[in-house]
Image (cartoon, rainbow, N blue to C red; front, side, top):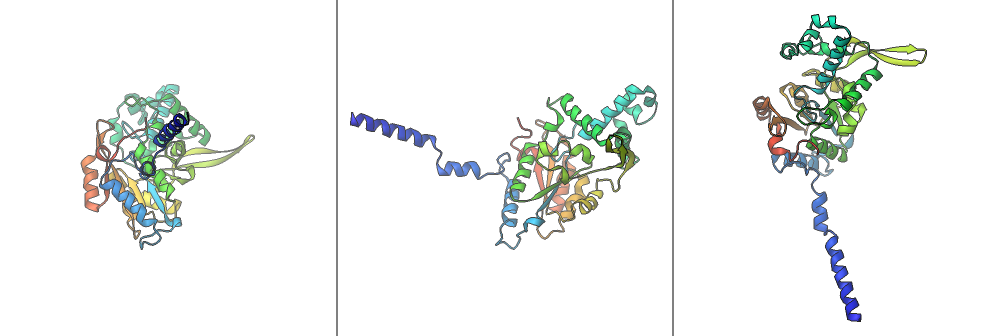
Length: 329
C-alpha cells in the first residue's frame, strides 16, 4: 500500500513538473519584446539601439527626460488606403452637406465628391488652398464635441470594404507593439501627423496606446464661445500655420514637444524633414515603413521610399519581410 501511494506521489510530481514551464521556457516567452516582427536587420537595429541608449554605462546613454520618439500616423501605423481615414471622414461630412443643400454640388470640391471624381483631389496642392481646404470647409461651424461625436459614430458605422473592420482597428500590430516597447523603456512618443489632431485623438489611446496630449497635426483654428449653458470651441475656416506636413513637421515638433527626438518614424518621402530632424541628436534611429505587401495590405511608393532609406542610411521596414502579421486578428 505504501509503495502504491509512493508511486502516486511520484506520478503526480512528474505531472506537475511537466505543467510548469522551465526557466528557459519562461525566458524565451518574455525575452522577445518584438515577437510580431520577423528576425532581420530592422528588428536587430531597434533592439540594439534601445539596449544601447538605456545602458547607463554606455557613452550613448540617453537620460529618460530626453528619450523622445516621434511618429507619423497615416501609413505609418494606421491604414491610409484607399484614402487616409481623416480624408474619408470629411468627404462623408461634405456628402451630408450636399444632401441637405444640393446646390453645393455645382461648385468644387463638392462637385468632385458628388461625381466621385477622386482624381480631382490629386491635382490639389498640399496647402490651405488645396487639399487642406477640404478639412476647413467640411468642419466649419462644428463645435469640437460635434466633430468628435461624428468621428466616433463613423467608427461604429463604417467598415473597410477589403478588411471588413472599422478604421480605428486597422492599425499595424507590429508598430503598436513597437510603441509599447519604447514606452516600457521610458520613451515619450508623440504623433506628428498631417491629419487633424482632433481626429487623431479619437483613436490614439485606444488603438496605439499614445496619450491624447502627445498629438500634433494640421490644426483648424477654433474660437472660444460662451453660451447660457456653458462654453465651447467652434471650428473656423482657417488653419493654424504651419500646416503639419513636410517641413512643417519639425517646426511643430519644436512648438509642441520642445525637445529633439532621438527616434523618428515615417512612411513617405514627405516625412523626410521629420526623419532628418532627428539626426541632429548625437545618437538617433530613423525607421521608415515601406508598403510592399499587396497580399496583406497594399503596394505603393515602394521604390521612392526604398531609395530614400538607402540614400540616408535609414532603416527600411518592409511590411512584407519584417511584419509577421499586419493587423491584429
